[in-house]
Image 1 (cartoon, rainbow, N blue to C red):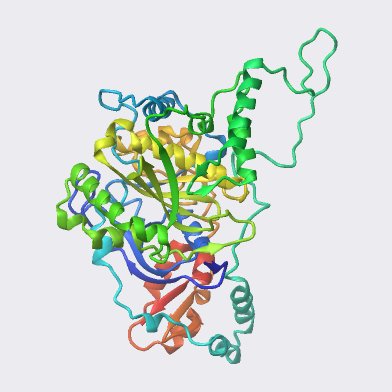
Image 2: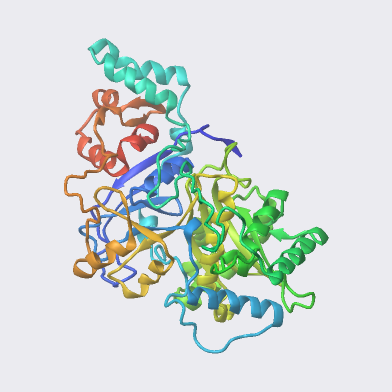
Length: 527
């Protein structure tokens, strides 16, 4: 895996003039979005882009034109650390437990979620393939750093010293992963605030400074779990549980007096010795160099085709190996390992659900600096009775919480887009607490505050402060980084060198959509 910050994102911007068929309302030309081809992308850049309403389908990264598209798509995230399982979520978790331990198959249609897959945003993504890049790899390889610095300093002789000094500062620090440790997240607990309980007067209730009394049943359950952990090696997420994971599992499996059960209470419950089935969840990096990914590729691709044909009525040619690879195996994200990051690193992964030795579902996810982002889910339709869309979403929330133990900044679960104008897509709002992204100021707003606004209008600005603006907006177009003839340069230099008609309007549009920070870090390819 590459070290953090070792390479720059390289993108080709395509604009967004043409309308495409909408997968939600079936309007033939109503789906409007801006798009770019990502030849490579750092996880920090992609994190910053999805926090501005972008999303990827394979290597194509797109952003709906919110005030024009037929079905506005709002980025939604769940606050994984504060997540509370609903009654219907518990039903799904209990159903899976019964099936694994006793082989019970519940009859009837699942009522928990109207959609078969929990992430449906990119099923009919024709535009991703119409816009595919045809630039050769050699054109995308920048020349030596010395050459780049000489070009970036060209403007110094023309009285633009100040801008160039700033550009050099950006250059030197641009590829570091920025963990904004001191920026507080709305709805996140403050780490500095301490709650101190004064001991009560005699006869006035429990002393909150002492641990609560515990039931004998709870103590027995905890001892049983500890014994189980000592006597067996548990496989979790494709790797053996480390000591810290065991502590995490124990903490989250304790029955807490008068507190609702957590996802972990359902997922990591000890199974009887005579359990009918064995379910294993494996985390596999999306890389043809990875032995696990390679060895399971054919089985995974076959499952994808079966799912697409049964659920989305695709023809065999729509969901062959090439389509599978392009859509769910080709990722622009550069794998990274950071000292304070998760053990598995950052990048794109397939979370495979193995039941009795065969794959029954695959959740495609991106692990980013602040979140787990769900890309897609496909599963075996023969196991629809297990509500695998809901189950996998709950497992991904639990996984996010587990990653947070090692990577403290990683605490959100991104579910793609919330589409209020399409009733069957509203189920994502049931994973609470969750926030929607304001399409104008890119500030997160609790979904409860957004829903009344969306009832009145399908396009809404959620930020009610009329004076608030996009804080990350483009302020200096000249500092946008460009890759031209294998040389990295600021747009101010490229503009003087360019022959032919001006492309300033297109670059201005690109920069306004990706924001100042990403425009100064990513390389915009110009032929």
